Length: 282
Image 1 (cartoon, helix red, strand yellow):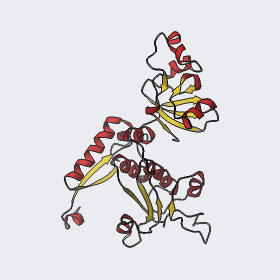
Image 2 (cartoon, rainbow, N blue to C red):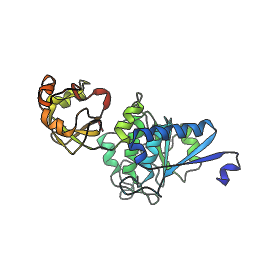
Image 3 (cartoon, helix red, strand yellow):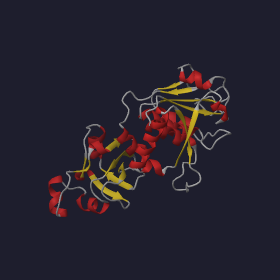
Image 4 (cartoon, rainbow, N blue to C red):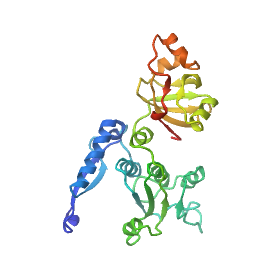
């Protein structure tokens, strides 16, 4: 604070927990607070609220927290500083002659494998958590750079687009704020298991999830809760907000939408998860 005040910069501390991202209203409150501080000329300093965070709602590392905040406020760039130069094509701790990957256009399964379990000497997050953070950032249209904090002028150079560390390109069409919250902010309450036909309709056809494509569900969830949509081989397909509870889905799974009212005695929706409340690939 004293260092910034010498340059006439006012700081504003913002303390968050994972629970602040789980609840839609608190998520929007955090976004509005940070934007208000910026409009007032303050620099928000965001950290985890360790005084109230329990094991269930704590982040445990700042990589995820920083990515969620960047996505929440529409940041252009997220700079993740570490004690490593970036992402390498092999583990630099166990193999010599590794090459730094300067740019990642898409986070593929191969990129995820390169992250391995490598953890820096400082901080609680390793390279794996940084890649997970990059997924959140780029899906929201935010560029991210992983760079070495010891490099001179690293923040200014990264912000000016110079070749620093590993740069992850943001998606040209980022998720809407509502879908960012569905994909990364809220807590999953259960699973909906779908057949191959439904998986193709969601992934390739851009359709909503109907009861006919559901083969089962797991967990106890209610209408409006967030669930994970998985294939029969347990592969992740999507996340979405359900229009029916777990008990109702068990009764209507595999049935046509026209049969729902006959089975339940009512039908509020044709879709179990509407396309507008569904995010693929998470």
